Image (tube, rainbow, N blue to C red; front, side, top):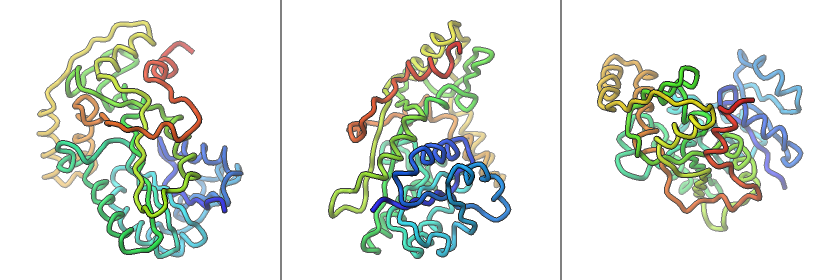
Length: 298
């Protein structure tokens, strides 16, 4: 029987495009729905018109998950801390396959567990592992993508593609894995249709559009736009000071942001293989091609 998928989140920079990608493939699934609070229903009127079900309820209540076997979370940074409660509610509601909201880095290497940007995602991984050991038949999939090409050269990384200026915290030679958003979204859809190996409850799928340095990210954007950038790499310690100030002030959103802006040019967005690209039958867009599509003349 085809999976029945419930989407938690779905109105952000990644969530909405992922919903649209599922809608383009909705005939391959038994059900596809988006969970939303009563006050946010109108945000998904267009999604409903395209054929998605809209489930109105709380992500922390088991009743919201009745009739679905698969849940995919795509949440904002502040909402990441809610995932253990969401997982518990989903399991109680009958869900047996969970995709947490953690696209991006490999949290198992170097000092990643101490990085604030990753903290809630790591807690979620630990909770998933615990619940999978406790609940027969419950399993989960981790999709690890590296940096989205769409965000690798952006204000978040200090790159102004309008003024052709880069003020980036980190190093030019820092390794980074870059994967385009369309490929990430297509891969997630396809992966839901690929069963886990028998006897396993955890699946980590690493995908990669290409590995390069952050200096090459800027170089490829320069090539795409036909201009030379004014580039300076800055000391990440400056952001560490701001992060600590935000923590002491109780400003969680700022704390997470200051922690995150140093990751792309620090080597912490590099994803070692092996990669699961071969599970799908499409070719992944290379970083140079992605930046040309994103920043080249239309």
